[in-house]
Image 1: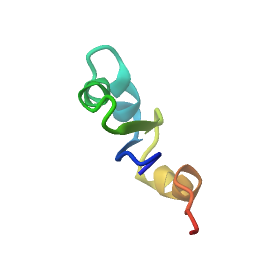
Image 2 (image 1 turned 30 degrees about the vertical axis):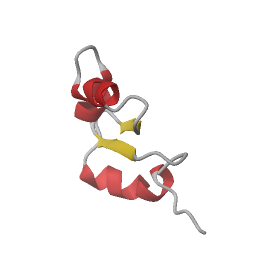
Image 3 (image 1 turned 90 degrees about the vertical axis):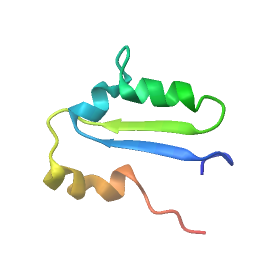
Image 4 (image 1 turned 30 degrees about the horizontal axis):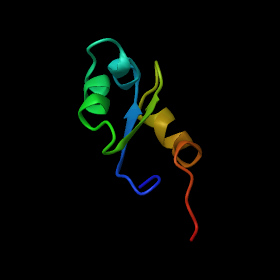
Length: 65
C-alpha cells in the first residue's frame, strides 16, 4: 500500500505502456479506482521477460522495515 491505499502496479511491455492511451484498460482501471487505490504504470516498449527480470530489483526496490 502507498499512503494507506491499495496499489495496483501495471508492469510489462508496450501493451502495458499503451494501456493509459484514450480508452485503454489502464486508464479505465485508474478511473474505476479513483480515490480508492493508486495505479502505478511501469510499461516499456520492446521489453521481454528476460529484460524485465534483469531490472526487477530496480523497478521494484525492496523495502526494509
